[in-house]
Length: 155
Image (cartoon, rainbow, N blue to C red):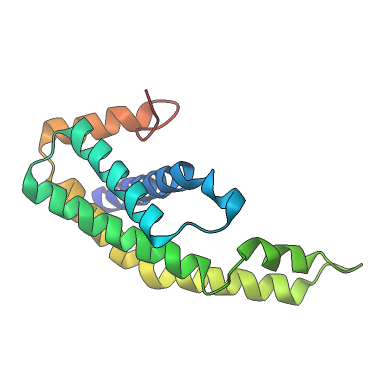
């Protein structure tokens, strides 16, 4: 496999793990509505601290990790869109006696555009962060990603 393909795949996978970690940390809050900006900042700080601690990051690496977190948060915000309740959008598609194909396609296209628009920034931030790690830290990332529950898992 070509190195740039491998890096891109690792980057996308790593980004999905971080987004998953942020989502997992916030999953309990969604039962009562979307997360407030204060709660999101709190969750983000915990995730950044956890990653920083596991990898023993220096200040420059922490700064790159924060840039990555900024990009991922922007990606998440763009993906969710301006809708107050994304679940209501999906429920509206199946609310009638027929599946609303046009509305489903429109929703899919909207979400795809949001991901495509911000993905280069996320990939670049992830690549900058990963490339700033020393070989031991990079190996630790690979080992943590091999664990069944992922590197953001508790325990």
